[in-house]
Length: 293
Length: 293
Image (cartoon, rainbow over all chains, first blue to last red; front, side, top):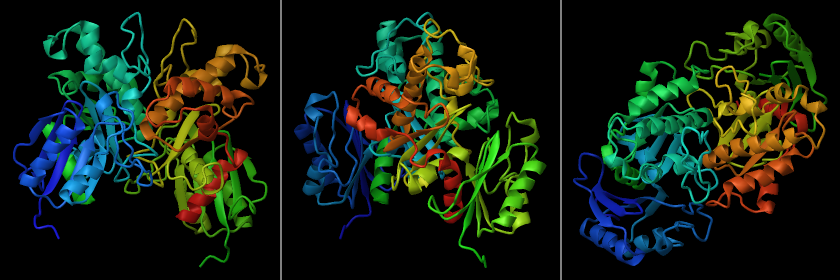
């Protein structure tokens, strides 16, 4: 039997692994970050952290793509990531063996959706989407009260969208789909299009209006497919000051008061929101995964 | 107690209501069709049919949009349809009162998804999409083994897609979103673009290649959002001879072997399929709705 009531959460990202132990937003303290180096080094640091902070179970919200099919021999592995060193790496096995606790795994965005549903901006909602817009774009979802997986897991960043080259000649930067959503509207796409990182784009730069348009179009596609009660937008680009109000305006124009989807400004303010857990949605969601496991 | 083991199914469409009674594909006989006239006339004929064919419960798969929120005072009503006479019409109440049986309601496409999952091309799959491409475009889905509703219900026909006016100058015909999926690729869009009904377009007309491209793009968006195990394509346009193989090719090119989504030709043949119940997916699905209710 576990001798602790704490659970561990790991937000496993391409640049850092964020770890915390506790039972919710009030008691996890400041999450600890480890740079993403080789699997041996980084997983070693994670294991060390949880040896010092014993937990009854672990949850991981990870970058991917992941094999989440419990019947698959590669369950718990990262599959085809462009990060060569992490390709085919088993995340679940080594942690379970080293720490001797149950380990739950889901995508980083599904974990964040669960975190926001449990303690954040989507509390108690049975149909919720969490979107991250940072270096890349990804979406997680709760549908009928359960995390959405399908047969593998969604990759909402790869939605195809209207792209008018006369208005935006940038060809897109997705290595698979060129001008898909991520190829047009990720932080990386903005950096390549404007020749500088998004942090250096002034608030009145036309790039933000273009960005808001792509975010609205992608969110519209998610809305007409999943009909969520709310969409939480996180990530370094998604939470940039002033961006979300622009996206709300454009989304209302695109949906054009169709069916029972949100139409009014008031609807939009409630519908499209920033994370309630700020930058801790992922690591807290990983703890929620462990608690539900 | 009901004195019959039969269930009733109604596929309620904008041009016809299709009714059948039984317990599955083997015993429903030939479904009976009533032209969609006024609600009083058409619901009257439906009630008459089920007085002659007594059932233990009724299921309706209907055109919409619908109010499917059991807590809403307008539950069971058609809401904002362009068909004026049917706007605000209660489908559930009159049938329940006249026939004194439980009545289950869902969208036509969700009913068809359930029909295909129960007896057709998606038998037993926990993650399945049913798409109809006819006068309009609509999608229903099973997610985690349950019908997908979200807070209202999906309207997948209104996905936004790449549209190159140089290649296709048709501006789209959706009254809400102009060149959304339905606005570009419904049977109505094809009729307006080419000046004749799809039945009169020869097999080698370039319109089919364009159509296959739009279908592939829309299906890609559904795939990256829901990650279904299979997509069943029905409807008068969707089942046009020779179209689906073209869509498979284009979908494989668009997905470009990304993540664990279907990549090979063999994958695509299993993934993107015609209905197993031919044109009875909807009415049989409505019977399945009644049986599950």
